[in-house]
Image 1 (cartoon, rainbow, N blue to C red):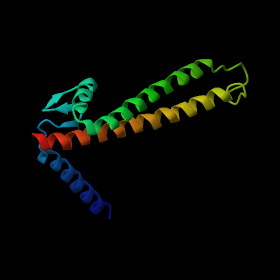
Image 2 (image 1 turned 90 degrees about the vertical axis):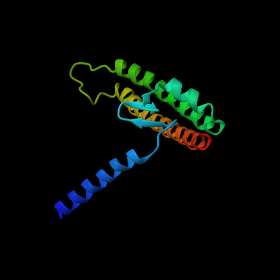
Image 3 (image 1 turned 30 degrees about the horizontal axis):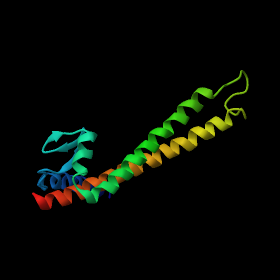
Image 4 (image 1 turned 45 degrees about the horizontal axis):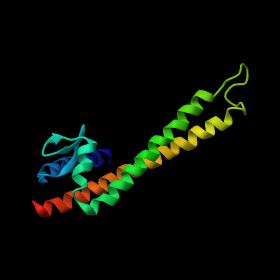
Length: 139
């Protein structure tokens, strides 16, 4: 049973890799290994924004992505601050009630960092997808 499952998964992964090469990527923004690319050249986030702003339908998703990214970066500040505020008095250990608020703060803001980071990525991908669909029609 394990060998059948292994062969199936291996064949499925080859199919996914093969599908990547059949897509025409002229003037399309896509992710490849080390970053975002367009016409087989790596582009920065600033260039992605300028290309997406040329398509009015994609601008709202881009704005959501930018705002969520800002919120994710703002979540890092309380994490760093509360990490430096954690004190371990001699003999109290990790269960000290004085440090509970700092651990809770770290946990809450780490969760918000993940939440807003994932939402930012989702909205950026949506904006790029809209950009690619609209630009494919014009070229």
